[in-house]
Length: 150
Length: 150
DNA sequence: TAAAATTTAATTGTACACAATCAAACATTA
DNA sequence: TAATGTTTGATTGTGTACAATTAAATTTTA
Image (tube, rainbow over all chains, first blue to last red; front, side):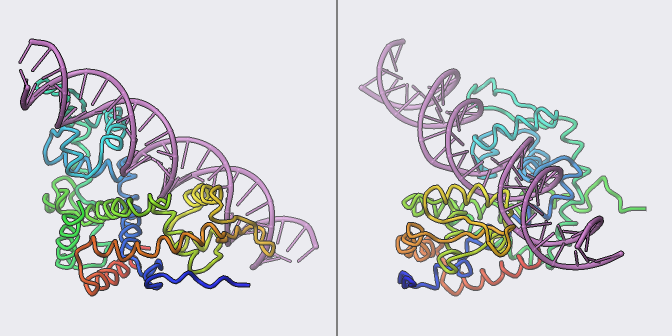
């Protein structure tokens, strides 16, 4: 015999289709997958690409600064950065003025990747089937939500 | 000949702040963190919660069906489901009518969690500082983007 | 129907994510 | 300045994610 369903306060809210979180989770992973062909050609993972976006702009950043900008902690960044260091893409050294800090610096091989990555944003925009205006509006919206959460 | 590669058509596109993907990635992780206090009280991780949302509704689903609905593959689901099986939350058995399929079934301990989870959606909505109408519109928007990508 | 192709999970290996803890370096203060 | 507290990364352990491969079961086809 069937057990009657437990009466939730509002049963319909406890369904996958009612969730706001799931589309975020799923879109995030599908977007990462959409980057795959471009990133794989450069031997990069998506989080590594994000680190490069920051280093191409700033040349040098501490682990703490990278973590603040990407919302990632050292447990994620330290091994990721060590892998990128092994590939000679970046350097890791203590700040002589504050030995607690580790400065991540762009190396020539890492700088050279910027030219090869320059087409990626445009190619990704094409995949989204959205106008630049739509993309811009959505980015503003998401950034606002992120500010509420973080 | 191909498009000229070296200088990006628009250099500003290759910045973290220009990306649409990053807000999705960051919001997704921050949302998962926002669930933490509620899920930890039940001993659940976020992907395990998603599996339960489907099982509370459907009682039984194959690994393939779970994978299709959550956009996750067996390399992710198999170990996750084995952990949930160890907790007696669900059962795993081959479909006698097609021995390739594994049927995941809700067990009493898993069913009992539904009542404890029933308040989570409402509590999460409160954290978002958004009206139900806004949330609904955004969910529709994201679901549409997901359909484009998946 | 036997062989080939397809479907479905499981396995393997790499790379995140993050909570919790640790240790060193720096800052503060009594 | 010595003791206390804070900051910063690294480490450890658990749990996803996913590509690639494998193996078994089923379906299709010659």
